[in-house]
Amino acid sequence: MSSTQLTNGRFQLAEYVRNDFVATPEAGTSHEDLLKPEYWAHVAADLRPGCIIQAIPEDNTYFAEYFVIACARNWAKVSLLRFVELAEAKADIPEEKGAFEVNFGGPVQKWRFIRVADKQVIKSGFATKAEALKEMADYENALLA
Picture 1: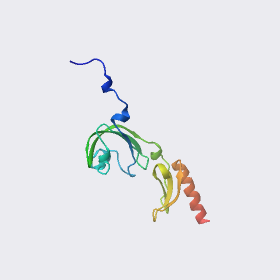
Picture 2: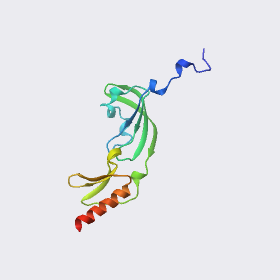
Picture 3: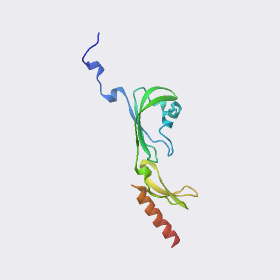
Picture 4: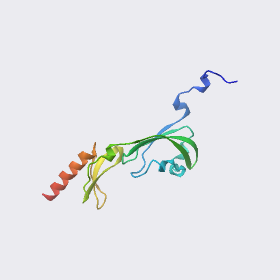
């Protein structure tokens, strides 16, 4: 016999049923990489079926949301719920190829410029790529003066 109404025992707050997580994959990690069960090996023990994982890589190229279907101690099978390519990371602002380069350093460092030779961060915390490029140009001009 099928009930036509949802009962109290089948209706709960989400935090009692599942955990929500935020993942920050390394720059260059595709959203398809996150669909591989072995990708989650180091954090799978924290997951359980029904969990939601939101992913924004440190280069800020996309936002993706995954639903955990199954998991064990060192793997997790996830399904992609939604994917959004982020426009700021794809901005048509040319990057200078030389002694310095601009990249996104994640939610803490934000846009930054680094010395190419040793990957040393020169200055970080810029809200946009354009701001970091301008500051990098000013820095290079000061070095040449």
